[in-house]
Length: 149
Image (cartoon, rainbow, N blue to C red; front, side, top):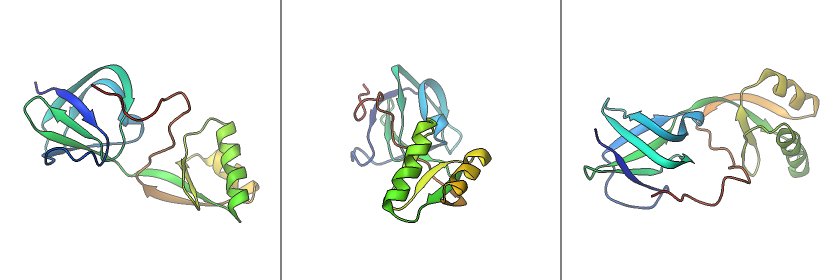
């Protein structure tokens, strides 16, 4: 069984990529798992601590190959606001409910939830259903960067 020996962050520029693993946001949070590549081959990831892999991260495998993590498109809510202050207020309400959120300059993305959708509309937000890759902000206790080995 091929095994992952190290993880590099997106854009780290190691050897050429020879495979892909497509995972949703929840599937990218792991510690020990048999990962299935897009070509149906497999590699074993076995780490001391859990990690949250990001789109573009690279897994170096013991046979010299490099596998790229690809974020799977997910069903999300796209939230837009009247102005920047309103967007910050909407982000506060989402954070107050401990929801994972991808925060951008002019919008916020969250996993679809009909109750939260109605709350946001009630607060004056413009909410649309989209299907995109989801890379929420990492929590305050997650730490900085990737520390894999």
